Image (tube, rainbow, N blue to C red; front, side):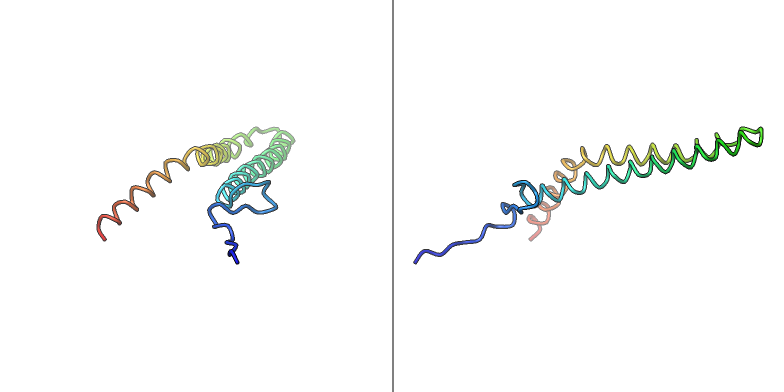
Length: 107
């Protein structure tokens, strides 16, 4: 009787992923999570800084620009990290393969 082999993990697909291999599903989830994290960060930034601007204006002063600028730098850095994480996967894989090849050469 012929034996039926289960699919290997690198080619297996889950029913929840629309037919993507497991590694592609993990990558898609990681990227979506990073983008959602940035959107939440941007929403909190907007709400807090609007509140600070209203408080600042009610006092007749304009100090709210300073926390907005400081936090804005962090928000931009977060956005850059999210944008580059999608592009950096190829670099990571190349570096990983280089290290694997170097270790194979030592063995």
